[in-house]
Length: 120
Image (spheres, helix red, strand yellow):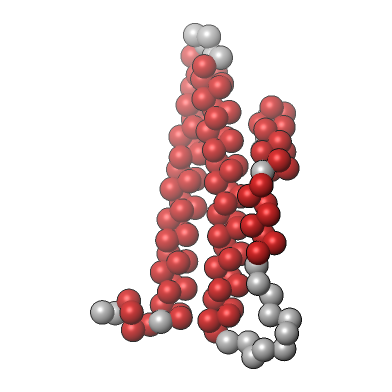
């Protein structure tokens, strides 16, 4: 399934002009010869996942805005309104799934670094 041209343009504009992409530059990479520990790996993975979630959030908001604009410009056309409503519903479901997975990943990462804290 291809993205409609206006949505593709919106994704490109939001993605390229977003200062959130600079977050990827803050991912620490151990290059000083230190011993690689589980906590360092977890921190690296968490930073990468956080960057991914920021980018996904921008895309989800862009899709929601685009769906809202499509709803507003449907001008009484029930088919177009239904398409936009479905797009909005799918964006919300996608957001719930992505952020639900984020909670699960965060819980697993917390358990990997400090297993006794969760079991209290």
